[in-house]
Each structure stands twice: as structure tokens, then as C-alpha cells.
Image (cartoon, rainbow, N blue to C red; front, side):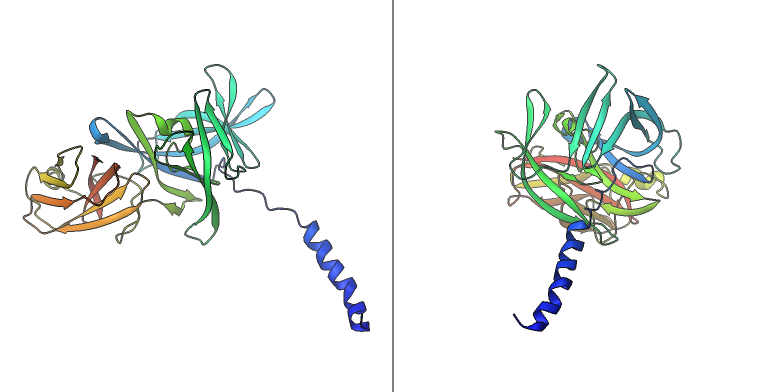
Length: 303
């Protein structure tokens, strides 16, 4: 070894010791009062009835020596008033725990430390298996771990967990992703009042709240569209109660929130035909937008 190598050896040992000594950064906080979620709830035939809820954490509960943060929700997603208590959660590193007030026990709601092949037990008869892990990026450029999970021994559509945010379905409770007479899906996630992540993005920007502010009653009536047949195989038809007086956008989303296709209607249109033969079987949503605002969302099933 040359004398230059001998001189550099202490420097390399110092670098190695420094890298070992560096602690891992703490996982992003899902249970945090700076966070807010906007979630779309749908129910009824083909999930055609929908509403938006906003969620946030505020105040704490002390139960069994643990500190839980209270989760609050409201239908008033514009003024953000009238919040109601929804549940209690705490976070310990990459694990999020939910307090079950019915039987006074604690449930593990999310475990972001899982690796591919690991099994997560929701209930005695419901287990999820981690299929893959990748990274999604927030609007500020920060990367977040995303887990893809499937029901064990079942081909049901995958569900996704994003570290620090929760599930894109079953946002706060993974088991609610498998309640088949209703559905809840993440629309937007904000921190300190700033939008950080959204699903179903389009050229018009994110949709975080479905409401009729700024849209006249006449335009709301124009937005009363129905789809048939439902379920559908190859062709889907959309029929409006009356013709649009202004152009409208129809955006087709997969149930995971992925934007697949967009069609634009002209003023005077009241009927639209959509070729869905290439779509995989599953649940889809059509977002109808006018004046850059949501007028209606219609769900349908592709066979």
C-alpha cells in the first residue's frame, strides 16, 4: 500500500463510521394534526350515490397508558365546520393503531414496515398479502413508500397503502375496503393547508370536493346523467336528462383512481357513447365536469 493509501485510510474509516452512526429518518406521520384527508364515499346501485367527507386529527385521549389522537370528520368540506368524532388512532414508528371502543381493544390498522410476501391479518377471516412495494411522489417532490396488497387466495383488485397517508381505499380502516355495499376512496391529502397528494388527476387539476357552488340549478339538472347497460360489456351509453347548454368533460377512472380516458361534449349534446371493450372487468367511475367543477359522478361495472 502506498503512503497516500495509508494517509487516506483514517478518512475512509471516518466516513464509514459516520454512515453507520446516522439514524434512520422517522417514518412520515399519518396520525398528525397537520394532516387533512378528503374522501369520497359512495353507495347504492353501482355506487351511484356519493358524498365527500373531510377528516383531520385534533385533541387526544388517554387509554390504557397510551395516547390516542381523535379523528374528526365533516360533510361540510367547503367551510370545514361541524366536525364529528370518528375514532381514535396512535402511531408507533411505521405502525398505526386504532382503538376499538366496541370491545375496548386496540387493532393494528396499518403496518408500513411490511415487505413483499408478508401477510397482514385484518380480521380472523380476512388477510392481505403484500404483492409489491414502490414509491409515489407528493407534489413537493417527497417520495413515499406504497404497498400493493391483495386478499390472500383471492383475485380481488389490489388495495394500496401510502406511508404517512393511509389506504387509497379504506383510508383509515383497511377492512372497510371490502365492504361491498359502499365504497370510500381517497381524493386528496393535505398538510398544513397545502395539497400534497391527490388521486384521479386530470388536465383540469385535482378534484378534492364534489359540490354545486358556482353551478346554477339549471346546470345541476343538466348533470343528471345515467349510464346503461350496467353492468356493461362492450359499449356504454350515457343519457342526460337534458342537453348541456355548455361544453362538458367526461373523465373515465379506474376504481384505483387512475385516469384512463377523457371525452368532451359540445353544447347541445345529451347522449354519449363509449367503447369500453378494451377495459378489464371491474368497477369504474365517470366524472362529469363543467366550468372546471364536478357536476356528477356515475359508477358502472365492466363485465
